Length: 192
Image (cartoon, rainbow, N blue to C red; front, side):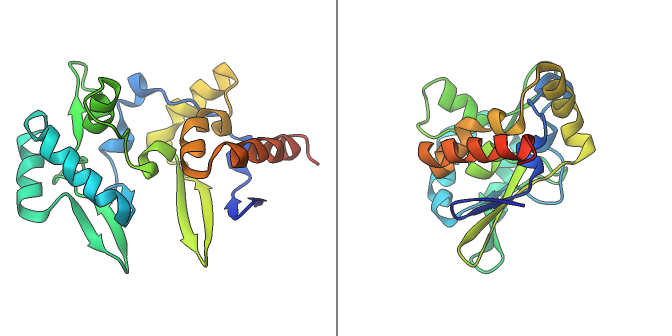
């Protein structure tokens, strides 16, 4: 484990190579899993707004789930997660003509129709955060069915997970933290 300010990270976040390869995995992280993406209480109003704005662009099953169960499941004690349809697919999934799952919120963000990119847990994936006693614990959640194509691409291109997640990590912790994080990553990679 390594520590950068009040964040404890698994060392493999510094050493693993990863670059998302959505054309190969087809957006598996949005469609496979036991539960929806974890979200903070502060993100819930934004997710509800996104649903209202994007409703007509979502799958009918997703709209039905939201009408019956809501955009988000959970509570303050156990945590919150985005609702999913019966297949396990996130309610915000959009599929292109090749069957690649993408995020409706992110698509709207990139086209200038929504002012928020996506939940931080989605932005940070395949890293998952857990807050314990005021510290964020960050782990690389390597799931072969989801991550192998990204790991292979990262190896091929020489892209570290730490670099791939730059935008998301800066969004979560800020530029100063990220600079200190990169210095720590270099030390870990060099064995110091």
